[in-house]
Amino acid sequence: MVTLRNLTICFVVIFFSHATPSLCRELHFDSTDRYNIRWGKQEGDADLVKCRHGLTVGYSFGPACFKKGSYIIVSLVLDDTPEDKVVVDWHHVENGLYRAIGVDSNGNPVTEETAFMSLPVQEQGQGVGKVFIMGPLPDWIEWCVLKVRVIFVHQGKQGRVGVSALHWCEIFTVLDEPKAPMNPAWVSVLRISCQWARGESMEENASNKLTMELHRNWNYNGGVLAYTRNLIDPDTGEIFFLRAFLNDPNRLGQCNDFADFLVCLMTSLGIPRSAQRTHPLLGSRREVTLPNGHTGRLFLFITWPLDVAKTGASGHDGVKAWPYHQFCLDANTLKVWDGMIAFLPQDWRTNDPIKNQTFVLGMFRDSDYRDRLVEHYMFIDLKEGGFVMINRPDFFWRPTPFPSGFIPLVTAVDLP
Image (cartoon, rainbow, N blue to C red; front, side, top):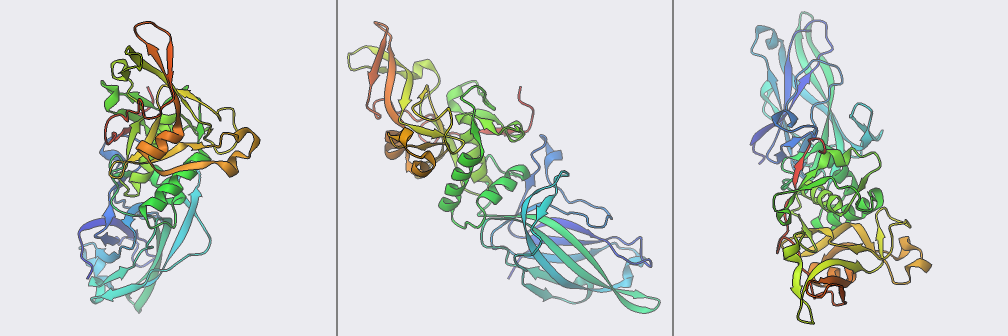
């Protein structure tokens, strides 16, 4: 039995009849598994996706986000006016889910021409008080448009006449309720995550797809600009200017951006994730006793050969020297997903990097990922000066903040 919990979308229905031009009727779409979402254009309540009212042919009502496999309860609500009494019944005619493949210049989804599925419909009740239970929705991650055509029975002077109306709504189906920092999830993020992970019904498979697509579609900028800003204590987290990152026409970012965006992509689908760095930023937290007994401060670490996003050969590929690196973490399993890098064999210069790369897909942080990332550390000897090189990946592996990373604070304001 499907139960109602909260109101989802209001469809204002247009009647193509000259007899009743002033009537206002609404289709209410209710579900126990509908999640609040926001546009991602501004801060505050004005950014939340709300029910919209209007009398415009072809009006879009949504978007809306549902859990995969959930049901939608469709009911008719009439104005409490004498004129509305001329509606004596209503009927569901047809529905179809059309896969979204992009958006047009007005931000509306562009869909495939043919519906990929129709939702079964159950009817309960009679007259204008009846409801239609539509579903289940796809049991996988999806970005689509739901088109619904209904017929209303109108009692006119010439008898009863059927009047039809067609409306549509942008639909996202996700694995579970979106998690922080995507709670509520951004429409601008869902349009990417639900497309890249489309068809997946398990967390790990969806995480893998998102990681590979991020690596294939975004570009490392060499570390010259970050869409993040530190908190007072930089080792506790950061602010991610997500809207500015998404608006970058060249799709550029550095490791903080890649890690935080991958967190946003996964959490928008209901997959809990956090961001974490290989090492702290504050100098006092980068100190250790060296094998010679002196205090040393980490200067940087040298990587094994890497294919740095975007996928394929670029001037950023190869061995890197970084003071730290940031990645996406499953805090429960301590597994890592990293959309900015893929590992290359040591003879990578003589091989096709696309065929020989190893994506970072659920590698254990403190063994597989660490040992494939870190070739050696370089420390500054704080007593005698000079550099000390240590080629043990476990010598100064300090995931920060320890042990679970942090949830980035996302914002839609402009980058300062």
